[in-house]
Amino acid sequence: MTDSVDNSTLRDAARTSKAWPFEEARKVLRHYEGGPQAKAPEKGYVLFETGYGPSGLPHIGTFNEVLRTTMVRRAFEAMSDLPTRLIAFSDDMDGLRKVPDNVPNQAMLAEHLGKPLTAIPDPFGKYESFAAHNNAMLREFLDRYGFDYDFRSSTEQYRSGAFDEQLRTVLRRYQAIMDIMLPTLRKERAATYSPILPISPTTGVVLQVPVEVVDAETGLVRFEDGGKLVEQSILSGGAKLQWKVDWAMRWVALGVDYEMYGKDLTDSGVQSGKIAQVLGGRKPEGLIYEMFLDEKGEKISKSKGNGLSLEDWLTYGTQESLAFYAYREPKSAKQLHIGVIPRAVDEYEQFRAQYAAQPADKRLGNPVHHIHDGAVPAEGPPVSFGLLLNLVGVMGADATADRAWSYLANYAPGVSQESHPALAALVHHAIAYNRDFVAPTLQRRAPEPNEAMALRELDAQLGALSKDATAEDVQAIVYEIGKDPHYGFEQLRDWFKALYQTLLGADQGPRMGSFIALYGVENSRRLIAEALALVEAG
Image (tube, rainbow, N blue to C red; front, top):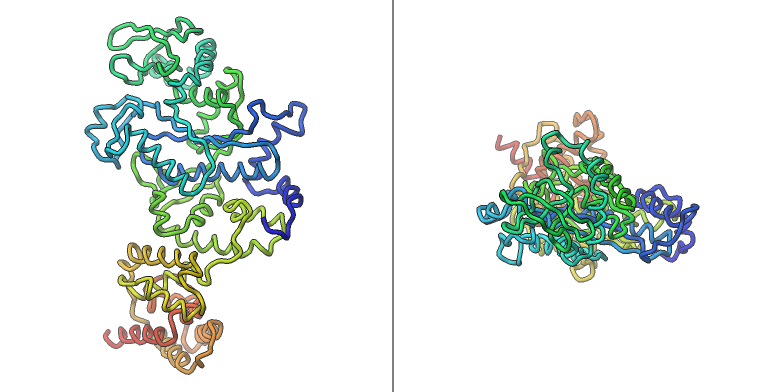
């Protein structure tokens, strides 16, 4: 928080802010203050939860759920002094249903289909199980970003007996749960459905078989396994619960107050909420968010591996830009692919630059407030990411950080990699993005006759500029040429597009005044000469 707005003012503004994290946090707050049933949570804290199924490699969609939930948690803390916790829960006792497409040793994994993920060898050969590998990746994601969370393993919770009392309640209220679930199932599925999934004592597979309750208090059930009738306790790891029942049981056992989930789980949330009531608890508050889509508009899938990894994003963009992209419009479907990164980087910086001058209510609606929990950096890089991309783009595939810094030193005297680490990071990202996605596709076209005339005029005026001319001086020249009817541009944007395509090899670009000031007048005139040479060659 900045010193210009005191905490009491911010707290008052938080209680009325329309920013979605505050709206979500107020849902939770209503349970604990302001109503006839209001009271502090018996467990001593307000619990936020995120769930994760480690059947495949985690992707940014998984990461973003924790990020968004953390934003709601921080919004809650801005309005209340009640302690909070965040649990990242891994459903790693689930049976592997199919082999993911993007992992090695698939034949080996196929031999273990149906077994709990914690009982399947790690195909990467690094950890004691497939679940342990994927859980480690998830925790690396979260730790890298500095999240405050408690990790919980489903397998450990079941085996330790932490869920035993709730499992007994499931058996005691078995028929009531069946009455909720059976009407939602197809006839064939309903014939074999059971809320209980016993672990086979012979194969170790998570069984999908009808179950008969023998003794709820001891957890004893009867089921068929390989043609034999088996009696087995479901307590302490002898079984797990079907997904919707498991979700509800977890809410009640842990006392979850808030959990968001994707639109694809809307029906599951309804059924699990009903089951939670049967078990003596309640459904937590939560946001139903829209799913991320890939470049083709298809849902991102862990098994397909068609989503971005955190490493992908952080190779080409900043952590702040990822958080910014996750924050915006969680109830709207958004594409998540490499191409969205540059714009996210620059839009984050635009909102960051606005923050300091905004009144309290506007700050709380600014995405950067939630990204930084109010401690928003006052300064940003002196050039945009888009401008850096254009700079390294004209250097071609052999662009280097040293060459980029030689231009930056002339454009913004006094900047260096040591004094401006955020800019140094942007240069690194720009070079990587240019190398992998821009340079291989850049192709400068030859100017049309009217465009060539305008470029010759631009070259002449640049040659006549004084050495102390500013980016704004250059921009004024560019504007005047584009608006001159002599050069035949119907609209000013036609002139800009011509500049981008003939000089930079792209359909979009920066303010040309800023680019020319950064790249240098003489270097820019050389680009113009190269473009005009294409006309002569043609």
